[in-house]
Amino acid sequence: MERAQTLYDITTAELAARLRAMGEPAYRAQQVRRWAFREYATSYEEMTDLPAALRRRLAAELPLGLPEETAFIRSDDGLTRKSLLRLRDGELIEAVLMLYDPRSEARGSLRRAIDRATACLSTQAGCAMGCVFCATGQAGFRRNLTVGEIIAQAVRLSRHLKDEEGRRLTNVVFMGMGEPLANYEATLRAVRTINARDGFGIAARSITISTVGMLNGIRRLADEGLQVGLAVSLHAPDDDLRQRLIPTQRHTIAELLDAVGYYVERTGRRVTFEYVLMEGVNDAPEQSDDLGRLLKGLLCHVNLIPVNPTEGSAAKHPARGRLLAFQKAVARHGVACTVRVERGVEIAAACGQLRGEHATSLRRAQRRQTAAT
Image 1: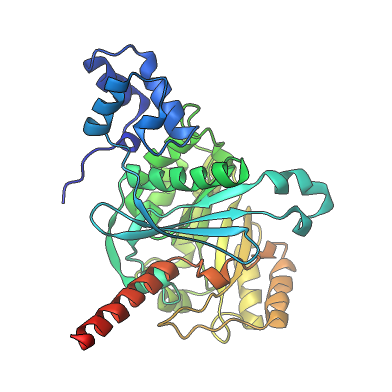
Image 2: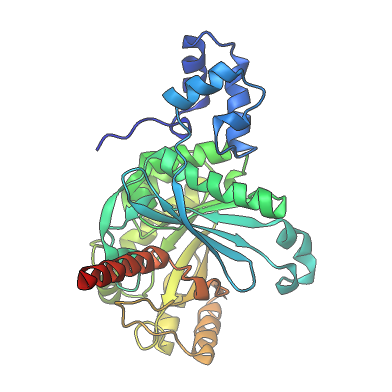
């Protein structure tokens, strides 16, 4: 289905051209961009320094395209908030807002902790990568998101943050539903809007793209001239296990590390390897040693993530002692290794969980309605 173009789909130059064609002065483009990406307007009617006639025309010809928010839930501590969004064709996607409590940070980094607010954005409806422990992967792939649909998530979360906290986003991670590098063009255009001075104005070093390990995409991203972070899903220190955990991956870990090395060489940025720990699957002592030896000498950081069990997956959360032992074993090889703080478990903050729970609830309601008739 062809989707109508929205304000979030176009660049400043494209917007300026549209406005010139309407007989408007050039500065109108900057006015509209300021309202969209700094004030997070949810309608053209909020853009009060535009003529009323222009606001009506823009609403008709270039809608904002904000998706309907069907749910917005908060963790018990209020630091993690998740939005379930319905797109114009009915597809459901998720976006997560993560705030940081300075009391949980080291004394020397209090200011950074106080200011940090991260948006986790989706790039696809569903995902084709098939990771066995991932709720999104279990649901399958639906379609790529447009650049406007990606940006609209950041607008929604930014508006919540502004209205409720009086703050702005400081970081964006493309770690939501889908594989960002499988939707490369839309993802990169979204990155540039988020980074642009007349966009969200978020520094490139505060933006991270996560990938299951698409080699061509990693190399292409390395040549973009952007200082964005790269996170790579590894999950295993050997090819056989990684193939079982990510069935769609056909290349070897050696080939993946070659592409990552190219990224490091071209950007000078440290790469993060995401490693979801699952009890009895990839958390054995010998696997931690293998992982440390594999990554030794590479400019990287390992982020250990205790699995968030999902319906349809047999993966189990590892014991705390086993998790910490794994971390120490990797670090003994000189590889930076930390355990991700678990957040939002009670609100199903893992990718695809809220969407899955919503779909399950709908199916149950439909079955009850059918049974009643």
